[in-house]
Image (cartoon, rainbow, N blue to C red):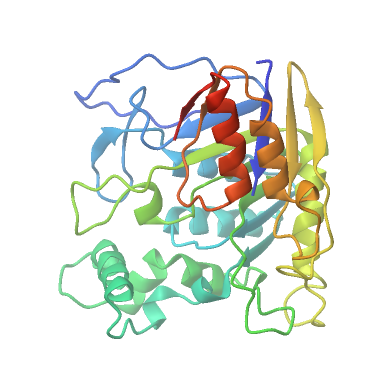
Length: 328
């Protein structure tokens, strides 16, 4: 696969034995850069929690299989994490001697079963959907056993896995810990748009027709790329939970310039954000994106949750006026 990939910021998916059949032909995967989409029409799987047969790649299964392949170390930085099967797999790996470290965003670093949703509509809806997954006997209550089996963070806490959040720098939280990556054995990097949540990857328990947010996951085999992600992880980890407030989150991080990693037949360019306000635009992640789009000759397809950077919009408009096809 010859090409150029920007990451700003796997094992095959489980196939269902249902009567539902793929509605499109799958594209060939590169040996070193594999890409998965939970809304893909080219594959079918059965969800592990609702038992729903649906279109898409099973992103959780990709993560699970990679975790199960680990023999040395697993570093995870993810904004939100509530998938119990992944938590169970991590605890099993920790028992086998694999070194595991986890970083979360502070707003999502407490077990959901120990929180009170209050009157906020979004928080209450989220809590009720997670409760519906965990309430196996259907009595409307969450027993201690149900919580320990279905609350991912409670599972991790019970196993005493080392975990910290973005208050480890001595602050109240950066509000910017939006990473979604995992490094396994200093060899594999899994990253993409998906938080490790039931609703984000699969769908909501109380909304049977839901299929999760549209998300992508990349699995890349590259020790050199894994080293860059490990360096980013170590900036945030500092000396670990309970140590000195030497973790670095948000803009206090140093500038990490874009770096190009060569792979057989392709290349990956990676740069980590955020950047400080006084950083020249050309050196920022948005600057890298704008510069890449400015090279567009024929087509540019963008799928984004939020888009507000005017310089990027200007680069797109310029290339569109020059005859390039742009879809967003």
